[in-house]
Image: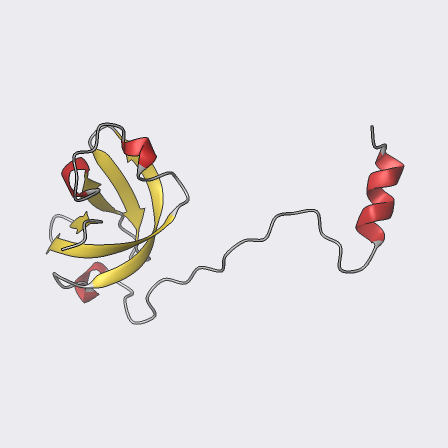
Amino acid sequence: MPTVEDIMTELAKPGRDPCQEFEVFAFAADINTIDDLVAEMRLPGIVTNVTRFGAFVDLGVHQDGLVHISQLANRFVKDHGEIVKVGQQVMVRVLEVDAQRKWISLSLREE
């Protein structure tokens, strides 16, 4: 069993980081507000919440969009957990935008 001294010794070695590698993520550079969104756009996003009726995705516009459970895949989805997880990076397609109601409808389906 490693001790605190063993751990500190390993961390002191240059270039040795015990953390797992992670992917760098960037939102679409030219999309800053909900008014910049247009139907049929394909954008990168991060899943922020998963519910029984779908998943919420952050697109970097200060308003998460909803991927309804029917739009998670091209097949019937019984368990949405097999498709998306919180923190997952996804590529979504914008279906509909209502800036007045701050509503963004998204899809993960391949069309």
